[in-house]
Structures are given as C-alpha cells and as structure tokens.
Image 1 (cartoon, one colour):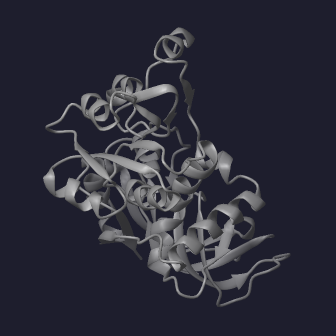
Image 2: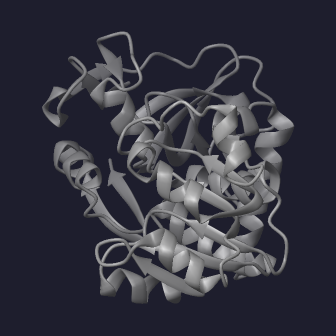
Length: 324
C-alpha cells in the first residue's frame, strides 16, 4: 500500500526531517496495519530528532498515534478490522499508514475521539505513573510541577487536584498563570518574574513541598532541591535544558534527607498489564470528567518542521497534533 512518512536524513535541526512516499508491506506476525487519523507530538520526538537520543540513520520518527485497523497480521488476537486504536512508544508514528505490534496498541473507548486519544495517551500515562506510582501523591500534600502549561503539566494539575493535593505550577507569563489556575493548580509561579524557590517557601510557610516533578533538567536542578521539604522526593523526568548534574549522596543528606529518582514511562508501561492499567486510568479519568484534554495546536504532517520548531521554542501549550 502506498503511503507517506517522515524520515530522518540525519540528527540535528528540524530540517533533517523529510517526507517521502513508501510502500507499506502487509503486516507481519503479531502486527496490525493502521490507517492513521491523528499523530501525537511529544518532546521525546525532539530528543530523538536532535541527537540527544541516538538513532540509526535513516530512521522513522514519532511515537504515538491513533487510527483504524485495516488489516490483521498472522496470530493477532483481540482486535478486528475497523477497530479504532491508539498506541504510544512505537517508533514510526509520523506516517499516514503503518504496521504496529498488536502487543502495544489499545482500543479507543466510545466517547473518546481519535484526536483526543492521540493527544493524551503518552502524556496521560506519564501523569498517571508520576502521580500514582512513582510518587503516590496523597490528599493534602504540596506538589511542585514544572512546565505546568505543557501537555503533561496541564493533565498533572487536574490529576493532582482530583487526588486532593495542593498543586503549585511553574509556567511563564501572566496569561499562562491564569490558564493553569483553571486546570487544577491552586497556585501559579511565573518563572519569568518570580524566584521559584522563594515563592514556594512563602506558599508552604517555609516547609517546602513533598515532591517536585521537574522536566526541565539542568536549569532548574538547584531550584528543585531548594523547594523540597525534609524527606522530599525529587522526580526528574525530563531534560529540556540539558541533563541534570550528577547528584552526590551528601547533597541529598544536607538538603533534608531527600530522595532523587529519574524515571521513564517506558519502564512503567513495559509489561502489557501495566500498559493497560495506565491507559485505562487515563481513559476513565477523561470519561468521568476529571481530565480535559486541550489540543491547542495542529499541523498537517507535511508541516512537521514548523511543528518541531514551535515545540522546541516553547511556544506551544497543552497538546499538539500532526494530522495525516
């Protein structure tokens, strides 16, 4: 079947991504063929395109998409032609049609659109594992979340509020601060005009927060350490400004017997049972009205270079999609 896809000609600036026609072979053992309707845009795509995470070149790109099954490969069970499905963490999502392993795809529940599923799956599962399994947020706890205006951040604010936590979000600008207060954050800190650690100290009466979720990395490491309460947990789950520095055990000791972890979604949804658990929690939170998914930007797949520029520049908010 003739289709279009984005391939990397190298790793570097957005211009290394090129659209090309290709023939999609019949799905192999355990695979399904999907006609894609919406493709999720994630910061992991930037890491892979830029070379932060090495890839064998030439390489496809993209990890998350939704669509409709058109063909079943041998030994596929539990799926039928016509099923609406979504997947995350399967390289090659930047395409109009593709084959994907049935072990990593999920049926989209009635009441959730393809676009919502593609926009929310990986970001929602990230929020789920961060707040419910990596550090189990409890009612009444103070939580600091960086990049609160982003796709994961907007979901985390709502999720934390549902759990009864006091969510403190870090974002940039008065408009973004106002937006995240509508999305579960009790307090919003403007990183462009406020000292984050000092503001956290004021908000918590000098105690600090129980947990910091930091996706920024190098630029915010010291701030995160300074914002934590005694016995607090530093969850470093991203590195948009570069890797956080090495963490000497004595630093954790002197800063209040802190805990430090660098988790990844791949581990938390590796086993099929964990994948289904996490995805079902996300879907159920949406269907119950506890999560709203804001798709604030869409681009045609052919405009992927423009989309990457916007995401990398930090000018996007909420979730973004590429449309085949």
